[in-house]
Structures are given as structure tokens and as C-alpha cells.
Image (tube, rainbow, N blue to C red):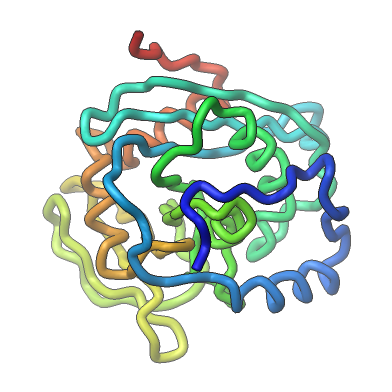
Length: 235
């Protein structure tokens, strides 16, 4: 069982990341067996959002981590890092483009967050290793994927009310939820990344939702990574 807050080597001092699809598939097949689906965290006092933007015509990745208090959702720390984006944008392989610089940013925090919500998939992925699962395994942190679009799977009709959810299934197995965070907006797609149960993942995301479609974690991280909007950190 992973140790709470355990950290692996950062991208700068660890093994080189794959640069081809064949290599990336091998890594995903190897790491998927290390994903732990089940609640393995203590009291949640902090929750972080992570996201990546790009500059230099996509050659440079800009990763943001914003740590919020929980359940108050007040920003208390943020990190913005940059690094080369060595892998192309290919659906199903997002982590190889974004995770190296996101892990670098996570490693610069004063203390590890109790939970990380990633802008992307967890186990709702063709090889059960979306960016949330990948980051969770490599960092040892509990993670959830909160994606804006569907990568794999199907779901039934979703009521148009806040907090409504229906199972997301892939290959006859539930891998997450389609979740309506507010009426009249498109759903988000929730799947556990690492050390979080399927049944808990949507509840935790909803606990981070205020009046927007996206949870505050993702919203703050996206605004910092893509728009350079610095959160007002609580002192």
C-alpha cells in the first residue's frame, strides 16, 4: 500500500519519459497494475488542482498547481513551472505531455496536498491509466480525474439537476461517473485516479464545486496555467 504523501523522483532526476507511442503504451501497461482503487486517505484538509497550458507554439508546457483549504476552498498556495513538452498531443497519452512538468510543480509545494483533482481522466481510459492515475502512481498521492469531455465509455440519460450522476461504463465495467455539477451545463466525467474509490470520487468533486461547471480546484489551476491569473492566496 502506498505511503501517504510518498514522492517518487522528479522528472529531472528520474528515468527519461517515453517519446514514442509504443514506449508510452508499455509504460501504461506496466503502471496500470500499481493503481489502487479504494479510499486510502485520512482527513482532508487540503485539496489541489493541477492543469497545464502551453506556450512557444506548444513547445513549452506551463504547469499550475493550486492548493485550496478543504472544505473552505480558499487558495493557500500555488506553483507555476515550465518545461519542454516532449510528447505530442494524442488522446489517451495526455500524461506524457503534461505530467512531467505537473510533477515538477507538485514537488515544489511546501507540503503535499491531501488530494489532487486533475483536469483529465483517471481509470476511464483505454488502458486504465489516464493522467490522474499516472500522476497518482508516480507521486503516491490520492488523485481524481475530472475531465471536460468523454474519452471512453457510455452512460445513460443524466438528469438536469445539480449533483446528478449516472455510472460511466467501459467494457461492461463501471469506471466512473457522468456528473452534472449545475443545471443547464454539460456534464463532467469523473473517474478515480489513485487511492480513491469510484463511489467516493464524485462526492469529493461535488464538495469542491461552487457556482461554476468545474470544481474550484480545476478552475483555479486552469486560470493560472492557461491565463496567468494568480489566485488570491489566503494569508
